Length: 439
Image (cartoon, rainbow, N blue to C red):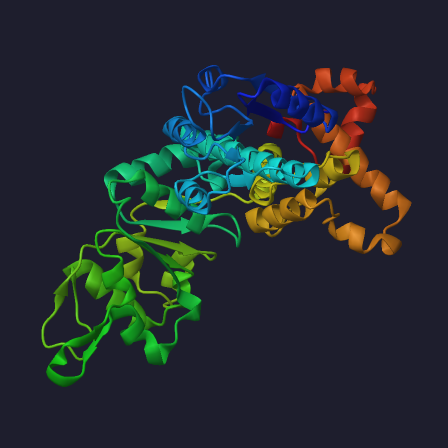
């Protein structure tokens, strides 16, 4: 298996042949060129290799070659080798973006180690670009990945909110991605260049609420000021997570700013204008809180003109696989590692687990999996897990996989699993699985 692609450029044909042979024996895929113009021909921004070039060459020196490569891709690793120990040249080349600068004679160990590092850096760059391209292509943040009916509706509504800039209220369990969705909407809106300010309302101190939220003015002549969260979010987006934690007094202060477009910093003698766009998130039924007198109805209606409920993962199981793959690929790209193979046990866990922590729990499982570790809760309590429990979990996973593969067609799933109709439906009932959930 090749360690990676190297374009070796050296005008000394004898040295070129020797280096090519040595690098190929070390496991690299080497293309050899004695002409720098030919050596850079055909290279594009998505080329996955590394350039290893001499500095002193006719037609084009290595410094000029490196500049030419930066015009194609600033992150393409170029390693230069020279027999002339020119420190000033080396420093200048590194400052201009050359990946490394080696002086002849270079030991085989040093050269191979440098090439391995450069290839690893190149792979990481390209993988990150692929992830960014995948996200940009679909316009999706992680919390919006999936093709379930619920996610299609969520994406359509998110586009409407981003285009209209209207205030909204997001409901859903912990970890379903309420703040992620708000960030996605902000990034897709006309206010994307202005700040996104997220506030955990449960963490606000009542004693510091005014200063933190509205800012303060003080000192001699009232020229010393601290900007509060609301003013920081002006012309951007203010996300209020866990808004139910605000006291009635805090709710009244927030409502006043939303309605008047003005805030009074602590110690100020005049109000400051603000342009607010507010999205709030909550885990509870705010309508019930309003009915019970624990939440202001005027603030609720101001925010709840558009209410959006984000479904938990267990209600959109067909999205778990794509989300898991996204999280694993992102974790592997960040660490520069490879993605471990998914075992049947891991797949069974993805299919059978209810994911009470939703996206947060799935992302943590993906992070652990990307390290080659077993992040399943039952793996940590393996001695207490009975064979019967493991078999039951695996059977349910196989049923779900068959239904998913056949788009919810029960007859086709029976044929795939080679089960009689009565046995098939008995097992669905036993595991609480409905074929209609997979259509």
